[in-house]
Length: 398
Image (cartoon, rainbow, N blue to C red):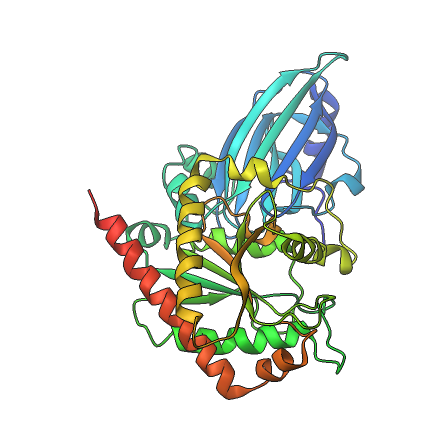
């Protein structure tokens, strides 16, 4: 349940103080998704804000002079990265706004701007999903930790120093496509894509876990619905070194069959790839969830971190195709490109693998065959092991 007000002083003192506060926070707005969110707060005067981070849950704390809050309750409903908003008097002459997040994040921008066409000021906060390690580093350097403790909030957790000191293990995240209310594609015989990808994902996880040098995670391990942006957020949170999204789609050409490996591009390699990306990017809408602002793939590709990330994605995709050749049936030109939103993490090498097409009876039969799946996951695991060696060699270079 959304807690709209936090009062750390007796109620009488709080009410009296609010009547004399010189600053008012008039409106609160949020927009974005699980990867990037913007918060805009309108004030009647210029707020002198101080910020710091807290953990468990991940929070951004904004301390203000004593402030009257006039927020509309509906504007505080969870959205994007933000799961809860709290505000109120925290001490004499001091108020606090607390934003709880779904996971680790970084504050990309926080600025106070004078309104151009009306009186007052606006505070704009942009937060971006990040990794546990990045958040721990920011938290460790938090110069306001003592102030947070004095105000009664939990400070840094005992595990922070351990997090910073621990060595990162090469991590692969397996993403079984669809799930829950989003069944994905369905064959003529009634086979559901969400079940095929989950079964295959579990078997791939078990095969990869045989390599003690590789840490294996899954975005979902049961019949759960996840937004596309949430899948990407999870990959970023865990400092994932390789993200593999699994799908088994249907297409109008029932004679087309075989595995396909996709990487991110703002321009699709062909009509089949374009149609595939459009369907997959519509997964949220099929569950009744609509994004206010669809991210532009071209802009994502222009990010500096994406250049190296994209290179690694291409390298793994090529290696995966080579590993599958001769062992698993592949579509013609098996490495293809399209604007898949699930591949848009700028710092996580990512591929989407169509392990087969449920629109083709032969592919459907293989996807349900235990022996075939075993062979396929072994070849994917082999490609991951080779990619792991490549990444180690690159990181070892001066």
